[in-house]
Image (tube, rainbow, N blue to C red; front, side, top):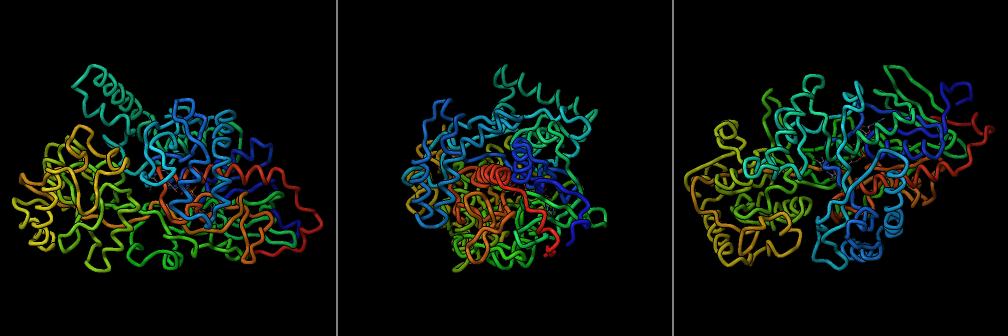
Length: 579
Ligand SMILES: Cc1cc2nc3c(=O)[nH]c(=O)nc-3n(C[C@H](O)[C@H](O)[C@H](O)COP(=O)(O)OP(=O)(O)OC[C@H]3O[C@@H](n4cnc5c(N)ncnc54)[C@H](O)[C@@H]3O)c2cc1C
């Protein structure tokens, strides 16, 4: 492509305004670069906007200041134990060494600020180096009103994560809302939340008190606006311009027209991974996991496909799993559409719930991480149909703890039963028949699990024996906070399926997020972060926030590397070609 064919020239072009892309754009702007961000959809935030917003950052200053001592070395021991010392180790070390600095950098120079989660155990909490507290941080809540009319540019969370048709509820809010009549402080907190929401609804399409992933992306967006970083909405990257000295520009598509952008210092691919690209899904996921995805529809694998065309190496062979998984139930929304509810932390570990396959047998420690739960579904399906699997409990359990999209405290289950979301019956055998599970198998499984509830020891899957299990159990239930009987009718069942919440396989990179070619050399001028970059966890789910943590840290590393990089020599610009 000749010089004069460019429509625009910047230092850095970033593709994708999710967590990774906005962080890369923000850091490069803070480093003094002229940056342009393009976003395929009409809103910022991507899947990150719908996420819990947790970042896994061992040794963050925020956590240490709050009294949770930790170190990169302890986290290194942990990752070596669960992933293996060879795979991507240099990337993990770069991540661990830079994590706290990246978070401090953002907190000091922008509105992207975090607080420690406190107790939030690693997901393989019985392994060497695992921590019970201090590694997870979350964004401070954000007041969306600060964005004015641009608030509508922030992608909302999924419907199932909001109450009253548009109010966000953080994890800390849940006990206070549920116990709103049990103390004056809870009542005031709940009343304030609802009053704020009602006032928001006079001017905005949803509540403006943002928490979790929505707070993270709104904070990133606000910081970009404050620094006048231009964002081209409904503009997709669709080609890379490659010259003798690497990637020098890109072709964007906006409103049916092509826009050619020269990028003096490089391009960051942050288009959210391959979730909705059928052929990459076929290549990187087990067949049984291909049906459902929690990612936003606009994540079509563009970054990975462009990287591949530019000669990049995609790194599936090092990945134990091509994706990070959660069991999901399929909800029916009031408008007739369906949604997916991820069973992350609220229900599976509570006492009085088991998960079974079509033989009526348990196949997993239900209180293990959502990723490990789905991996166990895949393994069990080889010998007995386990996709879908069923969560079995009493309806009393549902009212007390909630189940999937059914909130705790829900009095009438009639509507969810009518829609088929929940199936109930007066006996275990009748329930089994209604969900086409072997009645004798289920009866025997319930008998065994009731025995374990009494003794407090799960002889089959050791449920309740790790910090993670107990953290998500019911602390006031004994003798084991994760084991309870299923004996009082009516009984009920909910179908769950595998869905990915993030991609693991992606473009291979070096420590500065530079995309690596098939010969192992960095492709000059091409960076990847977020789910476009191969996960440093190699398909193992180490703890809360292991996709957003690395997304932000490698965005930071990419932006700073690009800022330190010399601009492309003008002499090479005429010899470039579009890939
Ligand atoms: C319910 C749920 C909870 C989760 N909770 C957590 C959590 O607490 N912690 C954690 O670490 N992870 C969590 N995740 C996973 C996390 O959300 C993702 O890993 C993360 O959002 C990936 O960030 P990203 O920047 O790569 O992609 P995204 O945030 O999805 O952003 C990608 C953006 O790129 C845009 N785009 C796509 N193609 C193009 C193109 N060609 N040109 C321009 N733009 C393009 C998309 O429209 C999108 O806006 C959760 C996921 C789900 C579904």
